[in-house]
Length: 356
Image 1: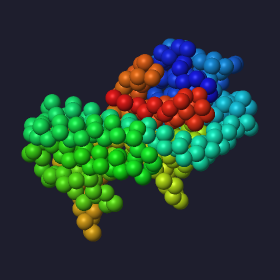
Image 2: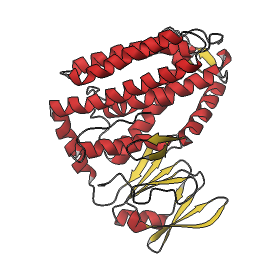
Image 3: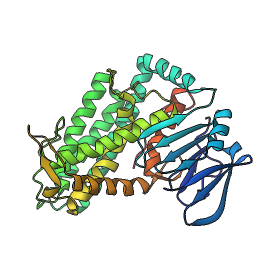
Image 4: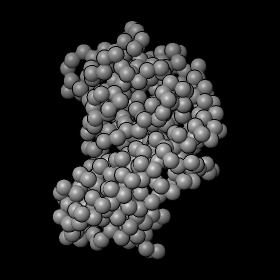
């Protein structure tokens, strides 16, 4: 895929977004059929005739309960047009590819890019810059509505601004990771002030994981897991190797690239949603349970509330500066993965993170 900019980026059917020559189908219950040299899309309660010419489509990505007919699958396979199935939340499930597999070229380029220390460092800088900039914005926006600690929040945001300035000066990955780690610590020091004082879930001590030992950390870990899932699905969908990352080191069974891609999404998607659910008291102490050993997790009713909010958040459209339009949250990881693929192929000089 050579371009990320569709010549006609407006959705053709309510509930669907067409990005470039990839057809994303998000409407639950939708069915896709082969009709001549076109795709006929049938959506419940939508009476219009929805036809998309196959020549405009290089890939179909179906989220959740979307049916694709066997004749259409056969035609896509014959044309080397991939079909990817994702869960409604964006988790990669399966993929159909035709006989020509261009992904190996992208993966080969990804491996060569990773083997180049300078290129790896430059790409990793993009992930860190996106994460810190978005974290800083969450603090600054939260300070306006915070019931307490507004000066402390703004001070932490200023600390992160200083860290952003230091990113270009990082001479190697270890220094860059140190900058990212210290800025994250400052962020969570400010994050605690964004929570209402009178919550019954207890205070937020600091970021604790593996396992989380308090409700707030348990909720953050839950949403981080979902964020990682959609990031890994995006890497798989685009054809990148999710285990070859640039900021995160290589380790068996560690999806380093998925962890890279999720960094810029953590604060604006996962953290922001956790703050909303807690401060609105949609999640309270009764929605968490402590397991033997001290780990805290959501109860089943708590998970239902969190997942419902997550699915709603995935449909929210957010501005994307590079594309100059709003994009559904569920599609942001795939869009960023394609931007990364273009950078790896040498079509873009830098990786450009998504920033709020």
